[in-house]
Amino acid sequence: MEGGIDEIFERFLVESKIFRDRDKLLPDYVPNELPHRTQQIMQLAKILAPALGGYKPSNVFIYGLTGTGKTAVAKYVLRKLQEKAQDRVLFSYVNCRQNSTSYRVVAELARSLGTRIPFTGLSTSEVYRRFVSSLDRRGRIMVVVLDEIDHLVKKSGDDVLYFLTRVNEQLSSSKLSLIGITNDLKFTEFLDARVKSSLGEEELVFPPYTARELEDILRQRAAEAFNDGVLEPDVIPLCAAIAAKQNGDARLALDLLLKAADIAEREGASKVTADHVRQAQKEIEKNVTVDVIRTMPLHHKLVLLAVYLLEKEGARNITTGVIYNKYLEISRLLGIDPVTQRRVSDVINELDMAGIINARVVSLGRYGRTKIIKLSTSVRSIEEGLQEDLFMLGALEMVTR
Ligand SMILES: Nc1ncnc2c1ncn2[C@@H]1O[C@H](COP(=O)(O)OP(=O)(O)OP(=O)(O)O)[C@@H](O)[C@H]1O
Ligand SMILES: [Mg+2]
Image 1 (cartoon, rainbow, N blue to C red):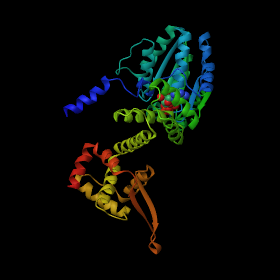
Image 2 (image 1 turned 90 degrees about the horizontal axis):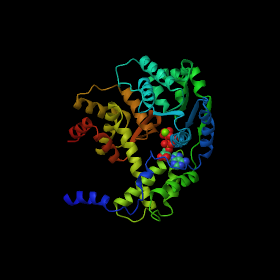
Image 3 (image 1 turned 90 degrees about the vertical axis):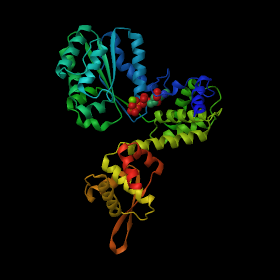
């Protein structure tokens, strides 16, 4: 035990064989070059450049699937512009997943102007008012990035966007430009038509990266992060190929590379190999499933628990009816009000869609058709996903005793 702990700590005291600078692979690091995004960078720079001359840039709407470099490009261009502008232009970047209410967003904007807004206690309209007067006093162009803007709209509606897209009418010596970023186009259905057209004065689309593009991105990050020659030649192409299949997601590609290198380092290996990448891939896939299971609603968990227990008991040809009986048994044991068989049948469909179980329709000849259900996730992931829920842990112990 003692030796174990020492060993863990020691590893960080001696210099890493693998990493030169591990931080360069972390998702928040914005590199000095963003391969294959020159076009988007130039477009965004052109749109924002008028701010340097004191003119209000058009609003911009940026859309692309996850991991296509939207946040990286926006931060990169803002950083460059800020260097040029010094204090002639005001900037604010708000992540709307972390700040998902109108109050929080505008409080953040005010804070970036040096106006403190208490966490609670003011009415939203009072926060708006303080922000407007604080901005107008500065007499500047302000460029605001609202990243992951869909979270804001889903949680709090589009009031704040309505306010921000019309705020210029209330300003006499300042102007505000908006950059909205999202990976979910569906949310625009919920936008007021005027907000939609105002936000979309300019639109930038970020296409998914191809495998070749991902390789270039990884090579450039790897050069900063790793010691020379520690990556076997097939490591980067493999990470890129896997991520290219998942919608060309650069975040996944980087995550695979980082996890593979961590595994290599943990093993005390001197090189990262394709095998490490495959292990990393398994780890990531397992984590995703465990997360899905862990965040499911209670009755989904109970239905999954029923399938899990049935398989564990060696049951074959598990049907919806069999699952429902098991589910009733578990609910009774736990003192939980069960839902109807109809609802459980819906839950089974949802678990099937999520890829956690597999429901196959089989024909029973003249007796019609039925569904045969199997787990399609490893038992380990299911146990881990359910066990993290303390309540389910109790349930597992109780019914498996
Ligand atoms: N062209 C690129 N060059 C180098 N690194 C990149 C490039 N594009 C993306 N990355 C890196 O990939 C990761 C994901 O990119 P980013 O966060 O910009 O994705 P995103 O489009 O904002 O995704 P989401 O919609 O999920 O927020 C980040 O670590 C980013 O630095
Ligand atoms: Mg992003």
